[in-house]
Length: 118
Image 1 (cartoon, rainbow, N blue to C red):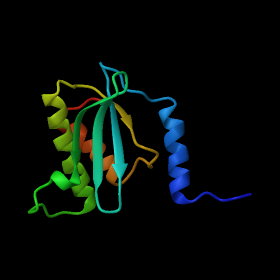
Image 2 (cartoon, rainbow, N blue to C red):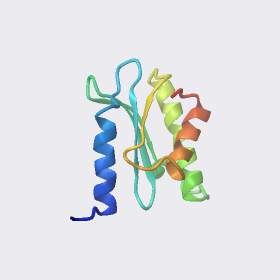
Image 3 (cartoon, rainbow, N blue to C red):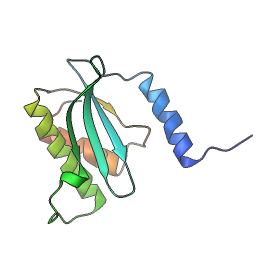
């Protein structure tokens, strides 16, 4: 019996979630990717395979000071603003196989604070 690495376990969870969660034109999918340095988020319409809005930690100003959790909350707010410009009000949340706490939760709360519904 082999044990899974952390990455393999996350990818397995992600595949399982993606079997159930898919974005439509009315409610696109908010996909999250978390790296060691930062966090990325996209609003994706899976029907037409298009990214409608995105935001990442690299787009934050260099003067931004804060923890990675505060950084994720700011990325969530920026994503919500970009989604509003694209005409998106409601999304389905795809946590990407990550556990819903810490930076992923902060991003989701920031997006909700910015006006996205999910």
